Length: 170
Image 1: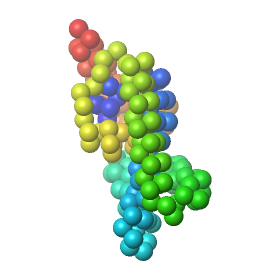
Image 2: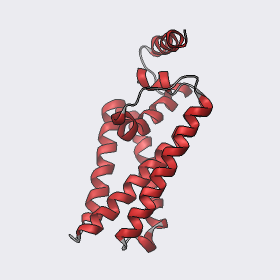
Image 3: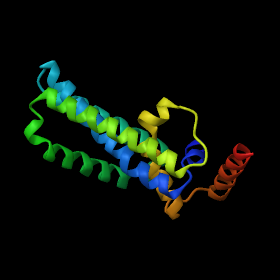
């Protein structure tokens, strides 16, 4: 969380990432649907995306315990809406892959634009953070910013974030 808050400090970037990291989650979900269809094995178009959702839910539960439950509802609703919207194309794995990779690229570009517009300095590349952890961390960052996720050391955490940012700017 310290790394995440240090390099995703501004409200503008936080809003950008809440939107576009979850667009990325939708893109990965659609790609997994397409990959499952491409195998020709029955039900893999359901199993691959379900495993992806379970991984997100497990990671969020590990980080935030009960504070993850609203996040599960939001992500489930987002993925359900995506499934309903893409219903006409879900039988065509090529279209799923095209839509998924296009949305992923769009979301990635928008996140880079967000970093360029809203941050003073850039984080070093961290692929695990960017490709898996960041959507969940944005949710918990939102709860911390709003004071809805009490932590024993939230003041200490923000002080450490401020100190890291100050030392990096000098």
